[in-house]
Amino acid sequence: MAVQCDKSPKWPGDNGDLNAAGRLLTDDFYNGMPWCIGLKRFRQQVEANSLSITVFAWRDRSKVVLDSFATEKIQNDGASILGVTVLPEYQLVIP
Image (tube, rainbow, N blue to C red; front, side, top):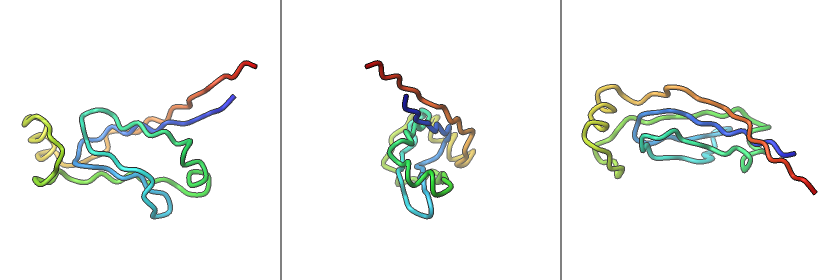
């Protein structure tokens, strides 16, 4: 049986970065959906280091296209992390 933890930050902003030991592991542009990150591919970095998520404020030059209501809300409220959920993902292999 294999276990994979998925990290799902909920965040309004322009873009976000996931780092370990100052090294960028992955990034995402805000699209209104939770950012689902499969951690299995970063196993060595996760076991050896703590993870940090950075969310950047909305920029007018952003190449992400959202409806005007969402863009105004992010601009007014600022970038923030509303929550992070870590879920184990199991896979059962039957020979």
